[in-house]
Image 1 (cartoon, one colour):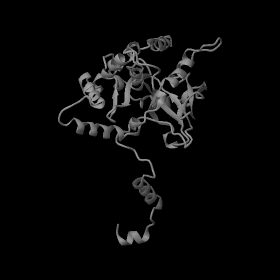
Image 2 (cartoon, one colour; image 1 turned 60 degrees about the vertical axis):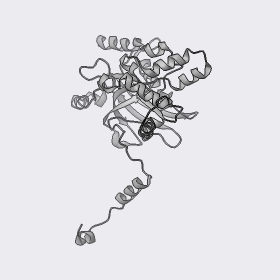
Image 3 (cartoon, one colour; image 1 turned 90 degrees about the vertical axis):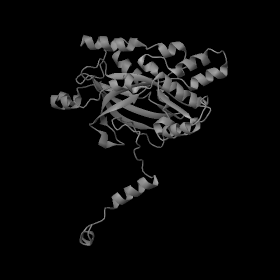
Length: 307
């Protein structure tokens, strides 16, 4: 900038303040592990949050408007983290699943407690349109990936498969006959609670404006990557990492490799502090790691065919 321009111009104070906050840590910045395609609700200092989203249909070539997968996230006795997707997500044997089964069946209560801490965490992922995001208005009207747990999936199932007489099934993923979802987050005993979340009345998205609907459809993200075997580590790779975390790995470079992997894990807040809401229920028995609960999936598939 020349002196003449400096003299005639005005300094943008907001830019200076913003830059200073980023440097000093006063403003949250994105890290390299963050997937910008994913939307996450924002909560206040009390742990409460609110947003309205719309679940979107499956894109062409995909049977269902969601995918699901499991992972493990725990700290071993070495202080190192094991943060990996479980091969059970793609129907293969997983070293942590096998270890947990042995621990659970050992008859030792301490082993059972260890297995509980190392159990699989269930994730669902869908395309959504953010209708209202008071904490981040810039997200409104955009299509994102949304990762959620069993509690919210149960809300979806409740409207797809109503329990009471007189209630008609609703396809919450439908452009024309679906419904907006009010995401209401509360802090209950230190954990995120979604019990108050609910669907609004059925309504056509964008008042059935086909131009807007088609534009939204064309922004859908491919969910297949989350269950693509090429995106999973091999059994041997996972087992090697597990042995490092458990302290069973020996030989030159083991300690250095442990430290490097831990730094990678702890660099991401989403890795170091996984949300309890997406933790799968109860002890990881053999049945828990092999059963897919396909009744919910087959129900939705039949419902889609009926349409």
